[in-house]
Each structure stands twice: as structure tokens, then as C-alpha cells.
Amino acid sequence: MRLRIFPDPASLARAAAEQAAGSIRAAIAERDRCRIVLATGNSQLTFLDALTATHNIDWKKVEAFHLDEYVGMSSAHVASFRKFLRDRVIRKTGIVNFYAIVGDAIDLCAPIRDIGLRLTSAPIDLAFVGIGENGHIAFNDPPADFETEDPYIVVALDEACRRQQVGEGWFADISQVPTHAVSMSVRQIMKAREIIAVVPDLRKARAVKMCLEAEIGPMIPGSILRRHAHATIYLDRDSASLLSSEL
Image 1 (cartoon, rainbow, N blue to C red):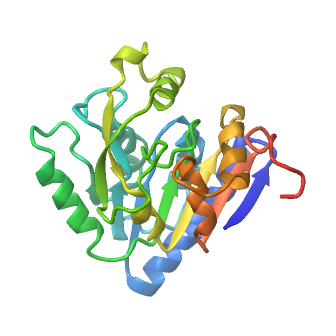
Image 2: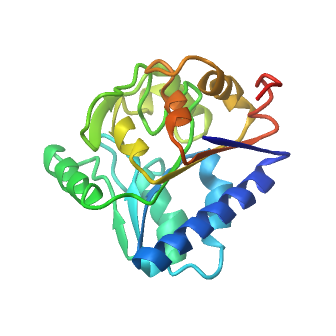
């Protein structure tokens, strides 16, 4: 794992986008395609804006997979992560092969199986993730399942996670936030050749400290990133503000 700290979210986003763009180009040059996992949420907005504005990426050779989605949520809902990615990434880049989680399917088994088969058909080159205020990665809230080999799983969302969604402005109050989601599993995320974690903002400082300094384990899901040889965690001055000086 590598840690990079920047003065502000804008400089963080530019640096993370530069690394991501270089990795995408390299994968295309080597294998004639690049398979990526896309994260959502307010913490990813500036980074995704910078990445989608980057020149000289052959986006038609990029296959994009969806990290997580609420159970029961229509893709037309303002808080839908499918809508988030289509509006902020897919339409901007012209990515043709985008595989989304259909969270509002009547029977989730079939769409989870289908996207899982597509995902695991070949290695993922690059996964983008964030770290939640409760330390989650994707929607793997504590205590996260570190053992399942299933590529996607249905998870219960804890109160801290659901309150974060209200705090970010996606829902008016916690009663509107779904209680379950479909999430890429922890082990599946860790199978990516490279991981870029974009984690700005003061509200993430406590989670960042726990993920980087506490014992690695399911109660702090994001701590697992320390075991990935090619993970880079991008912080700004605020999100890094509680870290010990030795780091």
C-alpha cells in the first residue's frame, strides 16, 4: 500500500486521475482493453470529473463494473448509483461496456449471478474505492465479511452508513435510506491488480486513522487495503489530519 497526501481535494483529484489514466492506458497498450470498477458518492465527484476530462484514453476499450447499489432502488432515483455513474462517467466518456447492478430486480439472484460471472471472467485491472465514515469499502459495513468468495453479496447497511447518505444530501432523512444493498465483496475488491482509494474531507479523518493505524480486521473494513501491494490511498490535509506523524 502507498499513501499520498495533498493540500486540498482538487490537487488530490488531479493526482489520482493522472495515476488512473496512466494505468488505464497501460492496460490497453498491453492487453487491448482495461477492466475497471467504478465507485460513487460525494467523495468521488472531483476525482471522476478530473478523470473523465483526461485526454488520450480510448474509453471504448474500457469495461466498467459497478461497485454497489441499493436494493429496491430504481435507476431513475436521484440517489441511485447507476444513475450517478451513467451521468458522471458513462455518458461523458462513451464507455460502451458498462455492467451495472440491477438493485430493483424482483429476484436479485439472477442479476447478481450474471454480473458476477462477467466480473470474474477475467482479472480486474483497476478498482476505484472510497472509505466510508464507518470505515466501510463499497457497502461492506462492519463487521464485514472477509471470507466470502462471492463476487457480489447482499448486505445490511448499518445506521452510521445510512446516516452518512443523509448527511451527503442524497436523502431527506434516514427513513428514506434503504436498509440493504448489493455490494462487491471485500475479497473481490482485493483481487484487482491495482486499487485507487480516493478519500478527501474532514468527516473521513477518524475512519482514515482507524483504517491505517488500527488492527486489520472486519470491524474496520477499509483496513484491508493495507494488505494490497498495489493500493494507493489518496488523502487531503483534512482527511489525514488525525494520522500519527510517523506515517
